[in-house]
Image 1: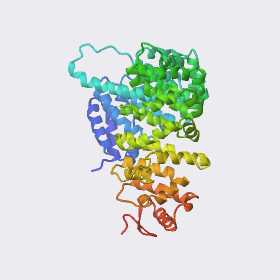
Image 2: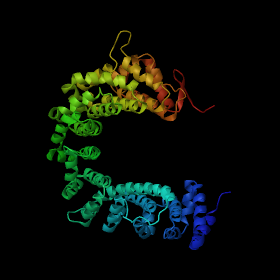
Image 3: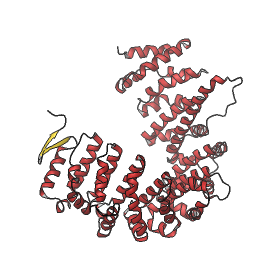
Image 4: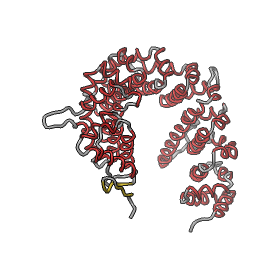
Length: 543
């Protein structure tokens, strides 16, 4: 029997009796988890949540955890503005609670509030809240070991560590969001107590220091103003020194620094700052020597390739010509015996070639290497583990993608040559070998592979040479305009390909009248229809 709202109201009111709290919280937790979202919202509206918050004023860890389990679903149903208006004091007070589970809960709720409204974010941007967040990123309050602790408390300790890590991640997310606001940036001014607190917490461990680096890179990447504020703190300089360090250094720490530098380089203002600081030149020298050390090759090389891939995506001609160690190492890595390294190199080539300028730069400066790469990509699509096969197909799709205004003679020729070069014509093969390769993946019983392969056809369906290929490759148009017991996402992807093909003004130059009729009928049927004749459709599920 469904529990009434009155039942919940009565149980929460009984929490004022401290001796019954554990039993009542357990009952409430079970009952709340059984509610659907609509009922949960209705129940929450009339509950005095302050009584549940009062249960947190306890040294009983189980009671605190149960109270958190009850509060989280209830708070998540409250509209952000109402949440802050009604419970701002108790929530901000809970930020300093010794329980990491509770701190994680309120930090996640504050993240929801901040994302909802810039005005609400400004309300939360207070120095004392920032200091509490910084402490949580640092792993929470430093407390002494409880005397006489028994061995059977190990499981509880492991759970607390997980809760602390979860709270730390929520604190990072909240600080990133608050730090990108005008008031948040103002609090990061040089000489502020926040910077002193960050420095103090950063000294606790490498892991904690990199949590703060992550926050600062996120703020710096958000806007030129954010970058300026973070640069003034000088934390970026410390991070860059760690990334460029030579000799006896912690390889994993350096790899983390390089990963964050790649993120900083993603926006144009970040890439410009990195250029000004001479970071790319220093890292290019490191890249040229990376194979001298096995550990560096395993951990640092992937991050170096990703870094140069990011700036190469923004300025492909300049990066490929200025830092020759990058393309040389990139193409060499595709012959590696390490599958993960191959995946990084493959994704990096495709990321640089995603834009029209990237395609032109790769073709004009490294035409022979790209021809070899496309043949290698055709092999990798078949032999790699499934996640990397999906990545390879996504990369192929990005190399084939051209906006309408980019479809000039040069770029159309480049993309067609690359696609055809993926499965070069051999004895016994056909001129459609590359299309047949991708089509064969569409027929495999793996949804993620089917979707990735269909994305390739979506990319070429708006290109004149792609339309000719679809029209002439035996069985390909039929494959794209039929449903064979596929799930919804695959149906929608096939429909998207056909709709894009039909909507292109150049399609009629390639498809016959009967093919156009089939295409029009299929598109008219929609993703939930099916063809039952050349111009007839039925809707699946209809009688």
